[in-house]
Image 1 (cartoon, rainbow, N blue to C red):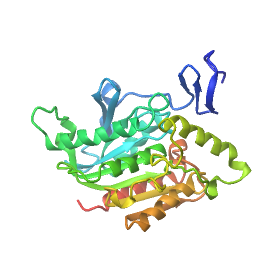
Image 2 (image 1 turned 180 degrees about the vertical axis):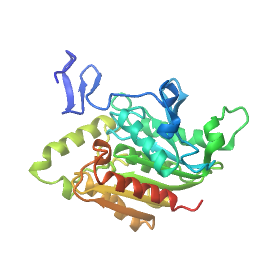
Image 3 (image 1 turned 135 degrees about the horizontal axis):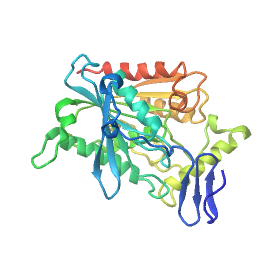
Length: 332
């Protein structure tokens, strides 16, 4: 695809995005969005099993959440459901809570795991460097706490008021979204969450990095991939920050202690062929060393976010079941 701007390209990740000298960003994938079921006149709740709607939290920044509610008949009439806060991936630069792939995936998660999904639309780099995405996602957590408390004068969403079990709140994300799960867990520590009880975190193929290369990042055959990842970090991190910044490297020399994470349990997925695999393994080992309750799943023969890129993969249902079992095994 030829560039659609006359301005010189200052950064390009082939097939992913281009950044131009005039500041414009051209996103080459992840741009197709779909409406929630509340805006679909042809939606059949009995057939689809999950209803969805968007709730705008900040019109100025564009922050909104897409809520997913399982059909009560599908869920044996259960009135209250655990809450799953989900952060989409895309290297902090592409994709959306309204992306077709993420909309389809959250529908499946809500139906199979029997949870209320809260999928977050956060600001993206390069236009909005980190910590903008973290600020937005943490703001959703604060909003949920206020929803749970039903504070006087606050508009309480009727789906959440009637069906959300705020004593069972989970966080999940893939790739950059998994990075956000970690950052939100660090920020949330040391605070009183009067309306929420956090039960666990799920990080799928987390997008972490560091200045020093580790095993899966070594070798001439991965040089192009590593260069591209470094480029993504260069337009996502605060200006002048290196890859040992705590936003990139959660086990780096300046990163907060992992023991401070607010999650009582964590589930980490990595994929055998994913070149980010060893970063996930390093994070898992560091959590164990910090005394955290953490489970680890390696999917053999698969690559980064395979369950999203190829939903019909024979191993995608196994990943979904492991996620569902993790949430279902928590005490209600």
